[in-house]
Length: 112
Image (cartoon, rainbow, N blue to C red; front, side):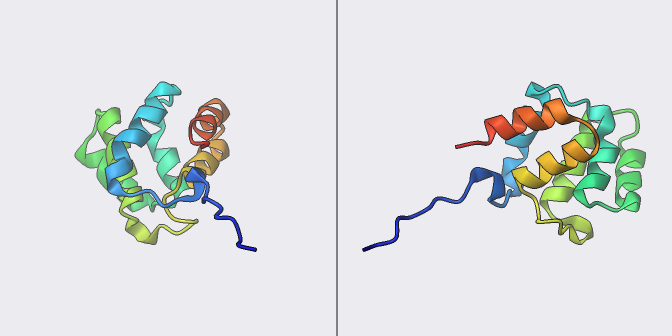
């Protein structure tokens, strides 16, 4: 008897740079504050010096800082490991920083 094909959950599939718009849309839909990009970046595995560089380059533009933080994560700068960029890693990082409502919304949206 053949083993049925089990599709990998969307939450665990690797995200790539072309997923940036989807991620930003989800974060906005679930009311994530772009001002919290620094904490999110740390919880996603980025180094503080990378986040400081982003902050210095785009000072005062929290939306751009969030976008650059997510780009760094998706490109796996700083040897981002922690499972690599996946919806699951994003959800875990959001929960770690106490953004549970955002995490719940993204978790629901990322179910297949």
